[in-house]
Length: 80
Image (cartoon, rainbow, N blue to C red; front, side):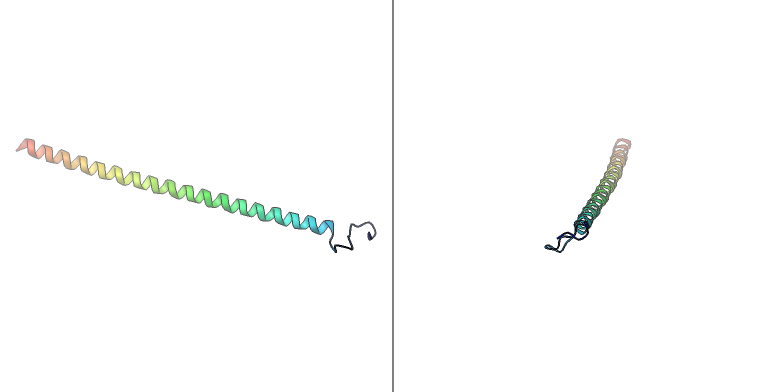
């Protein structure tokens, strides 16, 4: 029986408004999960980029050192 047209279902003991509230809660949880996933993905991507940049810088420094050593060795050998 409907109670004053307010949408209360006496058989299920629930209200459409309450179900709507549950749906809103589900949507809020989904939004929070999506935001957390996006933030985690962005943080991971930034971390990977930082690691790649650091590795590239280290490789560049190593190559420069090797080039300097080779040039010094060549100069020493040619001068002697």
